[in-house]
Each structure stands twice: as C-alpha cells, then as structure tokens.
Length: 313
Image (cartoon, rainbow, N blue to C red):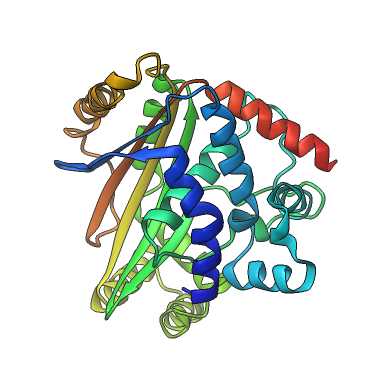
C-alpha cells in the first residue's frame, strides 16, 4: 500500500472510526466472529453517518486516484464535497433508502481498510460501471488482496445492512451461491483483465494467459477452472471471505451493558452460522470472517446517505 495513502487514510478515516465504533475481541470457532458497536451517545448515529460519508471517496477511487485528486483538486479538504463527487462520478444512482446498499458496502470497505492495513483493492467496483446508469459490478461487495512475503490472500467480501433476519438469510445465500467454482473462476479472470493495482501484475498476466489458452485450445470449463486453481495453489494464494452483517438492533439504552449485549449478539450469530456447511468450492485454503455490527437505526443512516446523494444531483 502506498505509504502516503495509508497516512492520509489513517488520519481521516481510521482515527475517526476508532472514536466512533468499538471493536471487540474476536471469537474463533469454525469461522471467525468480530463484534462491533457504535458509542451509546446522543450523537452516535450522526457520527456513524459522517464516517460513512467521509469514506465514500476512498471507497469509489483507487489509492493512486485519491492521491492524484487531492494533489490536483485538494479534494480531501472537504470530505462531504468529496463524497458528492464520488457519487456523481462513480456510484450507482440509487436513491431508494429501503434498497440502497451503499451503507453496507462502505462500512465493509472501512473495516477492511482500517483493520487490515496492508489490504489493497484489486478492483474499484465503482470504476467499472455503465455510463449514465452507473450500473455496478454485481457479485462480491469487496475485492482486495493482502501480500506477506510469498503468501497472497484474496479478499472476496459480502455486505448486508437492514433487518437482522434479512442479513442472515442473504449472507447464507451469498456464501452458497457466490463461491462455487465457476463463479469464483469468472471473477478471477475478470480481475486479471481489469485489475486496478500494479502489485500482482505477474500473477495476473499468468491468469490472463490461462484465459487466452483456454479460448485458443478450446478447454472445457472444468479444465480452465482446474488450470486456474492449480496455478493459484502453486503460488500460495488463500481466500478470505469477510461478511458484514449490519442490522437494526437497539442495544444502546444502557452503556454499561453494551459489552454484555454485543457478546450476546455475536453468540446468536455464531450459533446460526458455525455449524453451517456452505457451498464454498474454491479448492483453495479459505477463512470466513463475520463482522457483526448491531446499529441503533439502520434506516436513519440510509436516509442520511440518500440526503447526501440528493445534494449531489
């Protein structure tokens, strides 16, 4: 990760995150469960909204793009105006608070960027959209990688925000649908062609070569996928699947019992998911991490985000 970008991000977003959201010790069972709450204060809802809005420019643009925009336009001097710019230039034109997924997607972006400081986006989803409609890439809500020595981890995230039952069901559906062999392989070949970072250039060229040879020599779908998986295994690639569940649950009436309440929420989610055998067929080492974030009022946050978007119209 660019050191200048990391310094700016930590100053503007990570420090704000730590002042607004509490990170609790993770539980490790079959999967990993990380609990979060916002502060139990009168201003907490507006503090979370501000955090999400302030991150929108970092969500919608790559590290190098953010640095260039700041150098050329001083865009980071006013993060609300930067968010409007991100919306007008990059983000889907979704103005229905009941269905807008911006809240979950940006929260997941914040958690990954802040708590995995060497994570770098593979693809800026908002960059590869249709003109006018800004129709977004569907599939994974976050595409990152981390690199440590020769070990590479590809992050394929899912984000859900709303009512708890909806979030839980949708996460199960995504884990069963979006990590099948064909789906994962299609994403890998897409990334190789449209990657927004230079870090993995050698590996991505090889993935493109596999894609080209599959076309040239008329590989079966199975052979094409096997060539990809074998190559990734040889290069020690692992998969991390971060799943954000951000749902309305007012556990904030008594600040002294906040930790007790989040432990209870995490345990409920753990009981739901830990014995589930999801249809994850990537044939690579993988780890599923659930980010559990009960929020006093998700609808309030969504409406405030829509207000920001309307200001940009």
